[in-house]
Amino acid sequence: MFLIIRCPGCRTFSYVDRFQQWKLCPVCGEAIEVAKAPAYIEVDEYRVAERIVSQLEDYLHRNRKKDLSPEELAALREQYAEWLRSKA
View 1 (tube, helix red, strand yellow):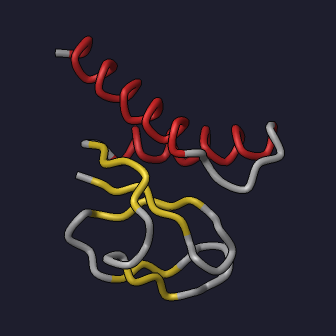
View 2 (cartoon, rainbow, N blue to C red):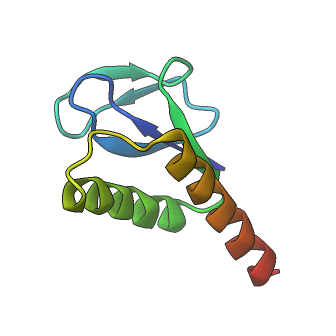
């Protein structure tokens, strides 16, 4: 399982193994304490995590937003859950 998190320094999305304690931000080099970083969604494969990270960055850039609203975050989690159900 992987968590999609966001760097508190540069606000770049990244993913980590859910048991990982620290993550070095690939953009700014900040050491992120995973337990304190906001977790957006938990996914089961790293390939899916990479895709979601890319799509989140693109979405925020296209819409000129700084972060997801609570409604958007809930919709993201619901879409992922539906995708998992349809995959099974």
